[in-house]
Image (tube, rainbow, N blue to C red; front, side, top):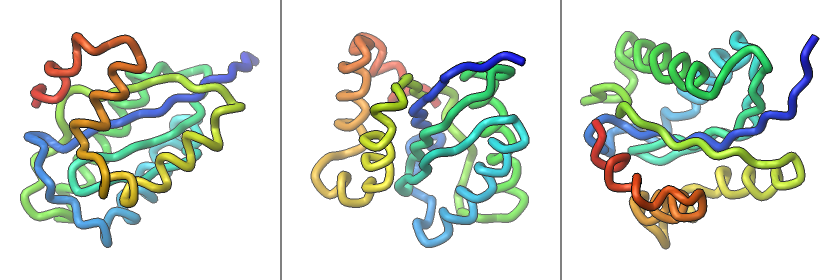
Length: 150
């Protein structure tokens, strides 16, 4: 058996940046995403979001790549949201997503950041948040593509 230490912070958003996800209903979606993760052999450490985006901190299995994980989460959750008419006007997820690794020693910091999304976004827009993520990851030149990729 292979053992790896693979922690990722994922951010993905609604298609066309639509702010249509009702925060009171989001916990149902989070539970569903946790189930997708578990079936994929992955563990969600934290999940939270806003009306237009979701953050996930996850420990990935050695058998799945970050791109496979996101493909599973986005495709299966999109179908489920549509079938259950969870959010009026939901058109699916945007094509792109952001992912960054983090170490186990930084897990508390990442979990705290994700858990406090509502408070955090009182001070900073989603675009400002993403621009910081891309800058910290050395990907500033790709930020505009991400934010406009539907």
